[in-house]
Image 1 (spheres, rainbow, N blue to C red):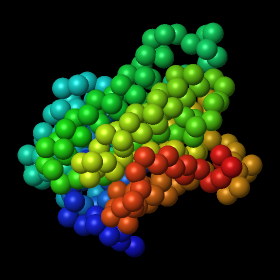
Image 2 (cartoon, rainbow, N blue to C red):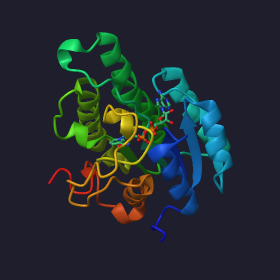
Image 3 (spheres, rainbow, N blue to C red):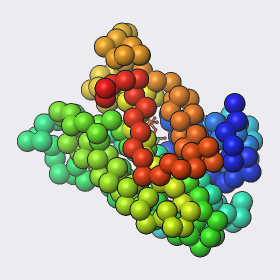
Image 4 (cartoon, rainbow, N blue to C red):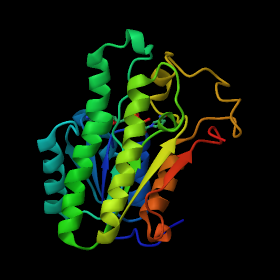
Length: 250
Ligand SMILES: NC(=O)c1ccc[n+]([C@@H]2O[C@H](COP(=O)([O-])OP(=O)(O)OC[C@H]3O[C@@H](n4cnc5c(N)ncnc54)[C@H](O)[C@@H]3O)[C@@H](O)[C@H]2O)c1
């Protein structure tokens, strides 16, 4: 299925080497976007992009570095002329520890990527979109962990809750520029992040039986909703915070 208004647009996706970011690149390529796939893991990114079909350009960048964020946008604009769509997806999971045992270095490491890095990437992209003067659409990838407090998740949960706040501010400020900004909150998604998020070496069979849909999401299911929010079919949706969680937050 094709969503209206995606064909021919230029999309920048962070955290693109695997998981939700990789699936989103694939979906947007399927929708005939040009895709700038950004990740800090160069080898993995090269492998993933080599297996994709369409106009995809890998850019190795660390979103926690201001200069990398500016460079990734400049490289995208040089290659494809502009940036129309942005998926602010790169993120890391922290150690599952109670607050009283959480080293400040771990708190800072998670926040450096999940909120400070997401801010730097968002700022660089919004400056580009505003300068282009043609509008745009952004999806920030938060988490159900940013909606509902969970134990042993101080750094991750607080970073994702902050990202939801940042997303709302960006929606306010950029509506007048024709740029829509939304946040998605995935629940359990079957990616390499899932087992560490559960503090387990692998995800046990039947782990998600208690959810209304009884299973974790495939990354493509999150990518489909992101693609919808980026498309013209979501033309009146901005400032939204959308769980994609198989009913977990009911
Ligand atoms: N998997 C889940 O269950 C789940 C649930 C809720 C939210 N999320 C969120 O979805 C997003 C994607 O998660 P995923 O499950 O695909 O994770 P993942 O670990 O499979 O992939 C994340 C990608 O981001 C990249 N990355 C990490 N730090 C980076 C940095 N500083 N600069 C550039 N790239 C960086 C990694 O190299 C990796 O390729 C994350 O923001 C995560 O918090 C995931």
